[in-house]
Length: 351
Image 1 (cartoon, one colour):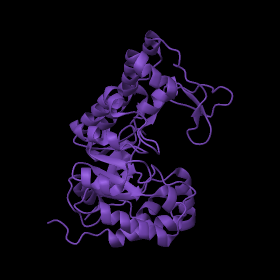
Image 2 (cartoon, helix red, strand yellow):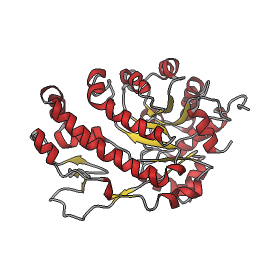
Image 3 (cartoon, one colour):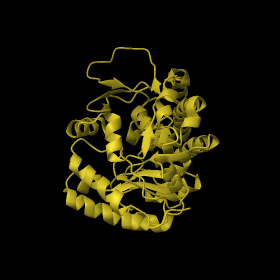
């Protein structure tokens, strides 16, 4: 089967020829792997057997000076400092009134540059499963703008303000993704979004608050993807098992980077309860296995995960973090790949 056929079979909960492989990589790990394996970016993905490719729009914003100490600014005006995306220096709407939330300089989709999408996707079309759309991390943006504890308090004390904040954030991402799909939706297979809703010990908010403030906007994104005949996959870190039934009811197609070391995310239980209702992507422990293990222990753990997750389809093999981090040994990632290619084959592919 071609990679795209393999992936779409899994999204239809059918058994393909083998379990698809997912290699989300941090820029730092990708650069390291390219050096060690002497490959360019596309050559690396070919070497790994990655069944997916991803295309990105970009934001074209006016260049404005950053304050002292800031290393970047989000599209919603939050200055951040530190490695990678860093952490917010301040929370601009922490003390805002409802009218001040509405008056914040919210961006619109005119800043979203889609001009390179078709050129990027065309070489991969009909062979790989192509991901696209805006990442849409509106939950994280809300935390940046208000502060996390403050956001929780306002859910109880000023719910209308939180509603307004979430609506402005989601409206931008909705318009951004719609613009992307209007430009290149016919070349995309999967709408890929991300919001981390779990911690090591459980969800960051319970089902009631999640259903009240977060789920309606996630459902807008899910419905938008389905409107363009796309599957919808959401990245979500941590232990969020109590929220999964609500996501299934909202018709989400796939959950990415399942972390078995977090509370409630035991793979066998997830497979038994939800394996016919939603696709699981990930589950091979980045924290304890891929980073700290040996190629032999990685292969053992990968085989155990496959034994649990692959029966009946509905599973994509990959690391349990959103990206493979730089400190991960390349030989361990290759061991994961080798085990999936050997042990991840189904006895009989569908006709």
